[in-house]
Length: 166
Image (cartoon, rainbow, N blue to C red; front, side, top):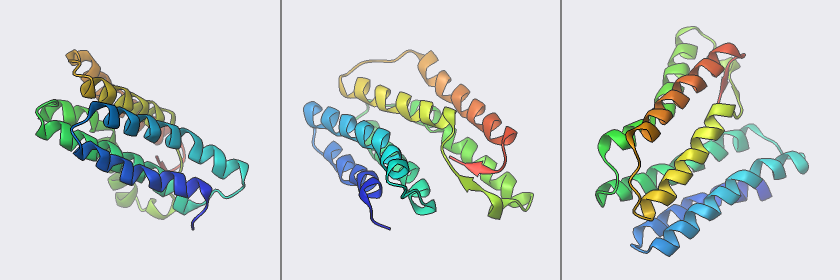
């Protein structure tokens, strides 16, 4: 289903490829545009009454594609260590764990794909850390521990609500 909100989500894929250019300005521009499209695609879908299951899956998938692609490039450039990358992706580990629990309990088909508070917060922090890494900042260990904590909190949030995936 192609509509304005889904088109904005799709834009994050080609934006990720700007990370192939070793140009800080282009990379920061890509991150900022990814942040903007991420913040308005859902709003547009609700406003135009074009919310769909496809869009609910596409939006976080494009976020993940963008962030994973950027992180791999930064890792290859030694601007991000493997444990820092793992910490930044811990939310997705917890999402997979939640999905496995839903499969094991037979509740997989009842999952509603929607955003959760800790998922949105994690994505925002990922974007902020990516900007910092592009600028050459070094982050203290506590920042990466926050990612793990947010992943745990997201997992708990999912467990406390009816079956959903964010």
